[in-house]
Image (cartoon, rainbow, N blue to C red):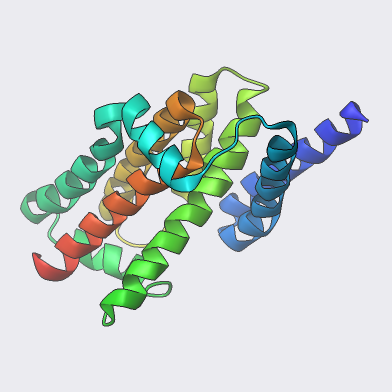
Length: 208
């Protein structure tokens, strides 16, 4: 039975990685989120590793500390630095996010950012990184997960702008991975991810 479960999980990991490579992240969400929900239900039955969102976020802040805010700093740096060395970067970001975000309605935008950040953290930290960490060293799991996280966010454009964008996406993912490794909490990563996205979008929309 354990071998069968391991094969199923490994198959899910492979499919999720492939879905990132072919840039169809919806497949990853369809597979990973149900897996994560099932694991959480099993944990509740065993009274182990139970995550309650507000409590988990607070515990995450205690365990990860300033790491929670580092992706915000990274995002602000990416946008402000681009004004000096790559002025068209913010246009690239808008083009990448326009298909999935509504920018002219603030309440809807906030809800979208919350949902997207949560879904991505479940897929990439709650499932992919967690599964990889059972097979390889956590540091390698974080790096590999971050590679696929970056590929899933790829958007075509000028090569220098694309590489600049992917570099900061990769850095942010490494930070989310470290937060997850320290806290074992998707909710802590979610709060960090949402804050980074919200501040980044705010700067692009209102300050650039």
